Length: 256
Image 1 (tube, rainbow, N blue to C red):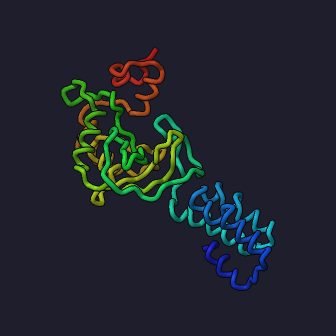
Image 2 (spheres, one colour):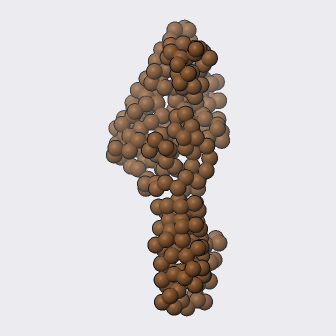
Image 3 (cartoon, rainbow, N blue to C red):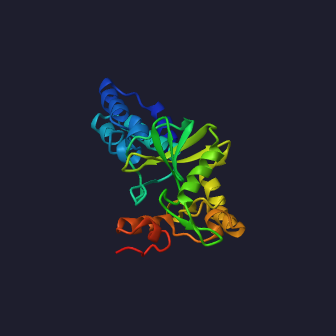
C-alpha cells in the first residue's frame, strides 16, 4: 500500500532530464524495480541498491523512492516468506536472502530422495518437512529394520506418477537448491508426505504448518509411526560425527 500511495503521488511531480537520469535511472536500473525482483527486494536493491539512494542523488526524489518501494513491495508480495538457508540439510536460519529466484516451476519431476525433486535440471528441496535420509533405517511394527528413506522416495514417486508438479520457490540454499512448496493435482507434497508418515513436520522452519497432518499420521500409525525412528536431522548429525548408518538409525548418539 505504501508503494502504491507513493507512486500515485508522482503525478504531482514533473521531473527534468536530470531527474529522469538520477531518479528513474537509479530507481529502475540501480535496483529499485529490477532489484525488487532479481536482486532481493529490500536487501538486494529496493532501498540500498538504488531506489532510495540514487533517487536522492539525481534529485528525482519522489520517483526514486516510489520505484524503490515498489520494488521491495513487489518482492514481498511475490514471495511473502523469509528465506531459510544453510542448516544441515540446506536450511541455516531466517533472513531475506538476496539471490535470484526463478519463476514457478511446472513440469515432470525426478525424485532424488524423500524431500528433494529435480525439475528441468533444478534441484528442489521441499519446504518445511524432513524425510528420512536415503541411507537411514527405521524399525517397523515387528521391530525389524527397513529402509524408511528409500520407502519415502519410492512412495513419493508413485504418488506423483509422472503428473506435472507445480513448485513455488521461496529461497535458495547455499548449495544451489531451490527451497519450494510443491503440489500435484492441488495436493501439497509436503503435507502428503507428513500425513502418510513418510516425513516429519520440521517446526523450526515450518512453524507447525504440517503439525495437524503429523498428528493424523501418528494416530493412524502410518509410515514411520508404525514403529520407531530417529529424526532425520539427528541422524545426519550422528553421521557427520562419524557414526555408522545402522547404528545412527537406532540411536542418534551412536557415534565415537
